Length: 124
Image 1 (cartoon, one colour):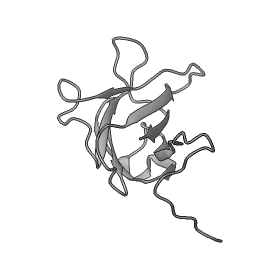
Image 2: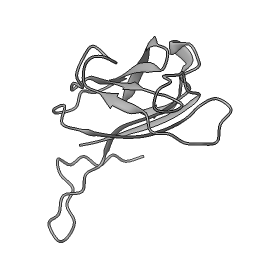
Image 3: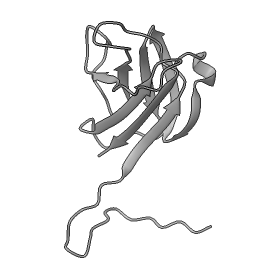
């Protein structure tokens, strides 16, 4: 297999193409050591308590100005929800950084809960 390494990818119209910097598919109802089903540039997930997780990158990003896109589904449900990425209290203790960010999952607007199907993608 070959590897292509470049600093920037642009279209023929000179528009930069932004690629996914990290992604993960995990089960928040499992123990932290066995949560991750599959991932890219995610080294670990820390369980911070019911419905709260910190995702740690394998390789740090250039800065913390990234976008996290997400979806989750509670255990036994086929409905997808959006986990919330928080920068600081009350849900997490740290703002997103070059090495990690925290999320909160819930079944509705008021009930924080562990979630069995969570997908996240990070773009910068």
